[in-house]
Length: 408
Ligand SMILES: Cc1cc2nc3c(=O)[nH]c(=O)nc-3n(C[C@H](O)[C@H](O)[C@H](O)COP(=O)(O)OP(=O)(O)OC[C@H]3O[C@@H](n4cnc5c(N)ncnc54)[C@H](O)[C@@H]3O)c2cc1C
Image 1 (cartoon, rainbow, N blue to C red):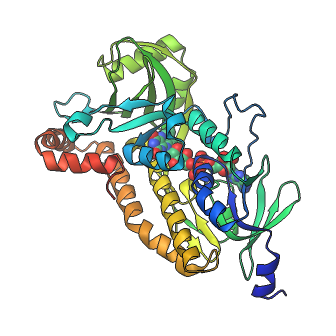
Image 2 (cartoon, rainbow, N blue to C red):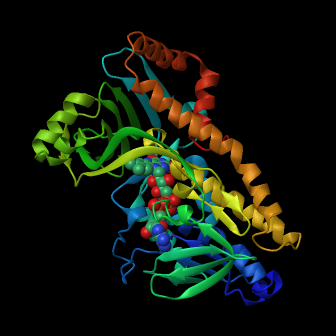
């Protein structure tokens, strides 16, 4: 058996990122200054193929028809990565948020103006974010293995050994698992996850609206589940319609006209008439949290570490904060001449992340539970809560700052 010292000398890479989705690609971009400063050899391994022509919209699990609500804090982080200007081409600012419950009086309103910011957040199609991040990565000295899947990930005395689907093998001092959590690699390493299925499925589609949305994002809680409408550039909105699992099938199969009619009945006419609907997709919703997010030579990021209910639009925003904190921890580790992937550095990262992660999970999960129960008195409590939120300025501003990713 090789000694740790021998292995260290024969490692093929300093850092290998497994998964080039939104999180893996953001991490690649965020590592740029450290790659330049320390000459680290970095690779990203991505299972889904990307089109040769970067102008074509790449399709892969991370960059599908969804659009994400990007908090103002995340926009600041994208600015740091040098990709915000390009991101903005297809982004719509969220100027107001309107939260209501069907059949109840209560409604909470948050506005950018009142908080003294230009936008509460931004809605950007995932496919566009993917394209911008990948174009940025092409300018960096990062190796791409794509399409290539990591089939085996084995810890060594120092770092990890990776076997790819094309038979090639790599070794890395630090491996970042950003595979979305569905590839079985976590299980291969014996990292267990806590899973709670919400028995809900999100139906996603772009919809056209007859009135200008004026930058308002709507969250409307109905007896069947929450409906979120996020502003997109032009007279279009991104629909996230949560269903009890199974009930979405009928709506996925409806002809467009009937689908739009049902949406109109459920949401009402705050945005005028729904005029058209694009292709519909569905996502089963669960809360999945990995029991460990760091080990010697390994960090788990993004959906592999935590998959959340999208009701509060926090999953990627939280992951991007982890990306930036990890890079900062690696920078401090390098300044103290610590070996890449050593535990003190990774534990410092983990300590920095734990509170934010727990808060966001509690916030998203609490919202689902609060609006998911139909106990007789609860609707009144929720309505009172929504009205109360309007009256209690500091609480609402605190909530908004958290949603904007400006507070942890
Ligand atoms: C309906 C819905 C709406 C959402 N809306 C929002 C929102 O508004 N705001 C927000 O902040 N978040 C939102 N989220 C959460 C957000 O989409 C996720 O946090 C984000 O997509 C996670 O990205 P990821 O890169 O970790 O994982 P993924 O997007 O799953 O990417 C993982 C990548 O790894 C690759 N891969 C997998 N296995 C392997 C392997 N073995 N080898 C190599 N490559 C591999 C895959 O091909 C993929 O490209 C939403 C989620 C859902 C379901």
